[in-house]
Length: 186
Image (cartoon, rainbow, N blue to C red; front, side, top):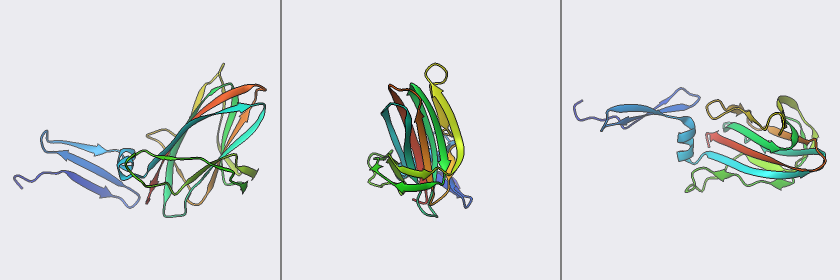
């Protein structure tokens, strides 16, 4: 109808929705990306940090996903100063969750906290199913990525995801990591 304007239209296919935004001044139509929409909904979280690792051995990080119907979509990247092997496992046996790591909401005005939990120094007695691995060395490769912003990995609900970091040097080296995830049905 004359004078009507499309400002926001949300289409839902049952697995997620797509938001279409209409600009009445320019008559432009654009699609709002899921990650951007999740930021504005307060359902997009991140942990960006580094850890100094001394001596050879393994360190473990644990991401525990919430129960269904909430699902976690994630991507992870790492860079190193040293010689590391990084593996990601699904499942496994957890004996303890020692150090909870703070995870931050990308919408800094939102008080929403994630349903998923992240830990360092987790006690692992069995690692589960290996689904990603990379060897990082400052002389060969300095960074690696699991998924990427446009192609994240959808994790199973109510599951443990183990990040195993093996330090192959005897000195002290640095692992920088970035974990990003958003929750559907948060």
